[in-house]
Length: 114
Image (cartoon, rainbow, N blue to C red; front, top):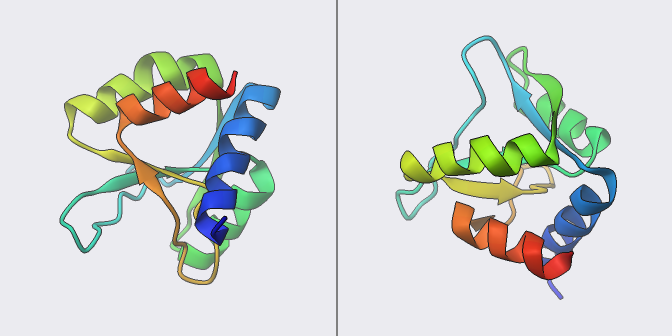
């Protein structure tokens, strides 16, 4: 399994176990980087430590916040879907790379991992 694949698997396992999703944001909101294919992804992490590393890499005053998994699943994922955004999971490394999924795919993977 690739590094990104193992990070994605860890995301779904960890958030189901902890019931928490982690993000980075500032007063304007969360970063949503543009991919080479023209899509934007909202990144989330499965632990506070992973999110803290991302905040440090991106800088610019980003802070780490948590969200209950149920709230994320019930409100954030539908909102991202309606805005045409992808969901990045456990991006890592010095350039914060990893896999992104449609919100529908995230819901399917959560259900399959449960």
